[in-house]
Image 1 (cartoon, one colour):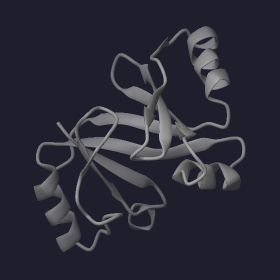
Image 2 (cartoon, one colour):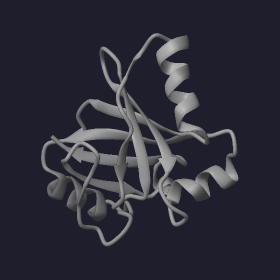
Image 3 (cartoon, one colour):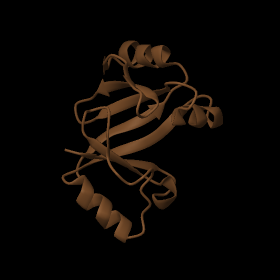
Length: 134
């Protein structure tokens, strides 16, 4: 059902420092910050030959990333995103197998302008999973 790994997301306490580290220290192609108010984050994508890394930083006091960083002040891996052909079919199959879809269960538009859903980390070995329709 899942396709390729779209990205691994890392919550960071200092977005500018993280961008500089990936660009200068690792020599990666780093995109510009992009605010995603519907998700309460500012994101930066790092382009790799086979996937992306997404840097996440809180956007506002109600950001879910703020809570993550309160528990993990140095930052850390927040989620993995897998591509799916049909997000509604994927959602329905996962729910029928007992997986919990976060929120109201309806896809929202993600940072790539495509529908996304998140799956509860307790159902996937402690890892928050994002599905993105391609």
